[in-house]
Image 1 (cartoon, one colour):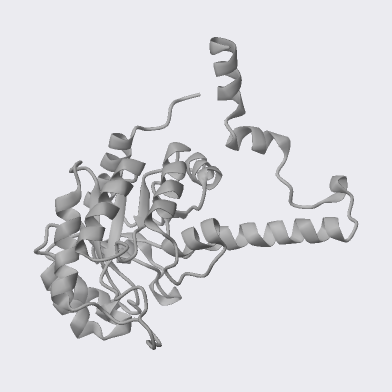
Image 2 (cartoon, one colour):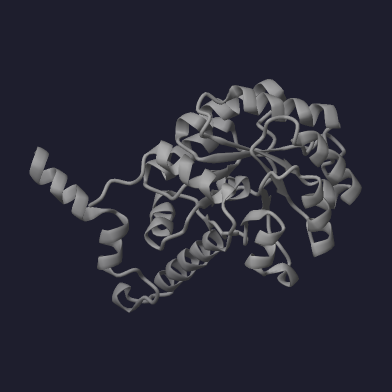
Length: 289
């Protein structure tokens, strides 16, 4: 079996996506098996979201209770398992700008291809109903710290803002103009809901590639997204929810008395052998034991 691409090769591949002319949808992955499936299916890149990490590692909602070490460890497992170039959602960098530097160092070592740092004021403070944005100066500091912390210039650092939905488009434009001066490699937005908003952002992006954290059905046009500078567009994290549904249905059926041989939707042995790379382990056993 062929060896998976090296970390350097995966980082170069992700940079090629950003410098290309097309928009791609990454696979949402949560563990090594999901990453391998994404690779086997030919996905150009994969996404490991903070929300999915919290669900996978803690079984908890996305309210920023996951720790950096827990997140980095799971990202490392996914990369080691042979996932496509992995973009990770590093949330707010787990603290202030100095914590952001530590976050970049840990995730770079884990083997990821790209990471986002956002300017949301997280974790939510006492008595705060909904999180807001950090002051612009603090956001700039985090982006500059992230760029300064990386040792491998192949690692992609992405500035992320939720200004469109948390404040307004004008604030998103103001922050875009500031973040393009920090040395980041790309820009990530949530809450972009129409083509006019996207065009306004693109106009001040200084040519940096754009990543969108989901789009409405009215914007589900990869060619048009690409023409607006979008190189990666997330589609949500349905694979994890589908896995939960499958596990729930299987355990429920067993609990209710269904015979194991009669269960539906169980991966056949051939699929399990593929996703666990059984042939490679058998070869290594012959060669080395």
